[in-house]
Every structure is written in C-alpha cells, then in structure tokens.
Length: 472
Image (cartoon, rainbow, N blue to C red; front, side, top):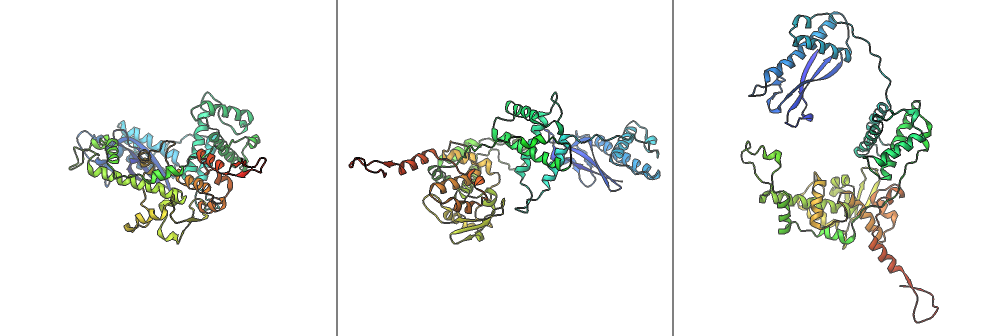
C-alpha cells in the first residue's frame, strides 16, 4: 500500500485554503479520498507531505488526521494480504474509513486487527439516461474528426455539456425522470415549453441546437440497442438564419484610425484602472516595492500598448478573414507574394487570401508594423483578447454591437462580397466548405444595400416619351 497526500490547488476556498487529498495505491488500483482538512499552500511541506507548524494553523491536529488515514490504509491492506483477500475500491474505502474511526476513538488494537469483516454486496443500479449521456459525452471528447484528423473543438464539447445541463434541469423534481422509452412527441412538446418559459433563453436557434445534440445522443443510444423511442427521429430542430454582425466600411476605417497615444486614451485608461485589484491590494503590505496603484504612468503605457495590440489583432482578422486561432499562428513563411497561403485549423482546407493594401484593407502595412520585432508570428499573440476589445470598442466609438474576434472574419466576408468579389473566391480565402456555412458569415449592411439598389435602379428618360428605361 502506497499512501500520498496532495493539496487541491484547483479547489481553493474563499479564504485561500487548499483541501488536502489522500491517494491510496494497491494491487494496481488507486483510490482518492478527501481528508476533510485544509491548509494554506504556503504552510505545506511537499517533501514530507504534511503541514508545517505556524501560528494558528493547528498543524499538529491536521497531521494527526493524515497519519491516522495512512495507518488505517496500511492496516487494511496488511489484513487483506494475511487473509489472501483482494479488496476492490468500494471495499477498501469502507475498510479505511472503519479503521480510521477506530483510531480516532482510541481503539488502536482493533484498528490494527487482521480481521477483515465481510462487506455486503451492493447490486449496482442500471445506468440512468443522464449517465448514458455522460458516457456518450466522454466518447465525444476522445473522438477524432475524419476531416481534420483532430479532436472536436472545446466550444463544441462545451455546447454538448450545456445540453446535458438543460436536460438535467428539465428532469429535476417534481418532473418525471428521463427515460429512453418516454422521449416521444409529447415529451418534445413539454421540453420545448420548458425551454422557452425557463431560464435558458428564448432563441429558436439555441433550442434547435439542443434538439440536434439530443438526436445525436439518441442515435448513439439506439446503435447500442438501448430501448430508445424512435419517435425522436421526427423531432424538429429549428434553424433560422438571423444574419450576423459585421463592421461597415466606415466602422472598419474608424477602428484602424484609433490613436492610443492621445491624452484622451491615457485619461480613459487611468479612469478604468484607477484602483488596484482588491486581491492584490491585500498583499501590498507584504510585498516590497509593490505598486499601490494601477494608474501610474508605467501601468498606463503598458495597458495602452496591449490595447493597441488587441486592436491590431482585430484588424488582422478583418483584413485577412482569419479565425483567431489561425491569426495567432500566422507566420511570415505563409506569405507568398500577394497571397497568404495556409491550411485552416478547423477545416484543414487550403486558404488563399489576398495580401495587398487598398483604401480599406491594409494587411501589408499591418504586418510591416511589427516586422522589426522579428517575432515567430506576424503579430503578437494577445492573451485575454476578449478583455481588451470592449475598451478598444469604446475608444473607436463603436456602439452597434459587442466587438469580438469573430466579427473580423464576418467583416471580411461581408465587405468583400459588397466590393463585388465572387462568392467562390471569397470562400477560397475563408476556407468554407459549403454555401450554407458561408452564408452564416455574410452580414447585411442596410445602408449599403439601399445604396447599391439606388445605383442600379432604372429610370425613364424625360426627353423621349415612352422611351425604354435606362440604367441610372
């Protein structure tokens, strides 16, 4: 039996204390158990796997608990070996807890007894609907796309997990539990009513997304000969096209024209970051030389630089129609003459993107701006881009919608189509595989749409009555 102890730094309490976990290894089996004790990470001795004494941390009491668990585990395994018994995880857990209670009560002799009382056999309950969903979700996390050779994206897996949360909420008491045989048209109607009247939203497209995920899961369950009601195949998954947000030409030019070196920009940054984060402020007294304000000139200059990098990263997505994942990986080697040639990370499709400057799209000037840095990528990678873009949006005076990195790709598609570039050639640049997926990136500029119709409108000549209409 091997017993180790670890701090759960991923589960800190509000006071910054880490739970102490024990790991038991025996007969090629492993069991993890929470000790019920916590420790300040700075008081933990990783070599001895115990708490270092410090005023007020009750190290002796905590270490005694940990030692009793270790003694209980060793005694349980020793007794199992003497009786030639191999304990499974459930049995070992019960035996460790029993012997720990004896040690805590002062019955050391009984705790070390070689007797291993027989444990009752517990018949496992059949997996529930959601347990099968968890199994299916686990398989999706290990699934590899035949198109890309890569695993499914984190955003898609998160979406599948979100559907599970919706189903669990739907089946919460006093509602009836989920069952494969009960998923019929009446169930669908109740689920739809629950979704639209509950906390999950009112979007038809979001509801359709959950239905598609559900149908995929039920198809998986049906393949495994589970008692699935086949009525699910006729469930309707609404998918309405609602257009997309994209920058107009004027808005893109305004974004590119933002000057982060003006006094107005400095004042805005000072106002936004005037006070130190409360968590850091609490440490100010213990850290020598720590700044007590985030609004000092050095901090302001640093934040202005990051805002400019974030703006330029946004422009890179707009000028080249890139996903943020591809923009962060773009290197000078992928630029060949007046074309950027790369393989899209998501679809693995070759993309051929125009690389020259005009009055609106200026990718060459943007890349040359950072050429002197001799970086591995064309532009700096901005961690936490979504945190900077709202401030960039404010300084650019853009108010129609929230600025995100996805807007860049949609702006490229919309403006290029408006310029008259054939759809097929724009799809070669973006790497879209189908017209349907491409159309989701095509926005509608109402003012520009009216102006285009106006330019192509036909008029009747006033000089010759009954003349054939001419183009305006």
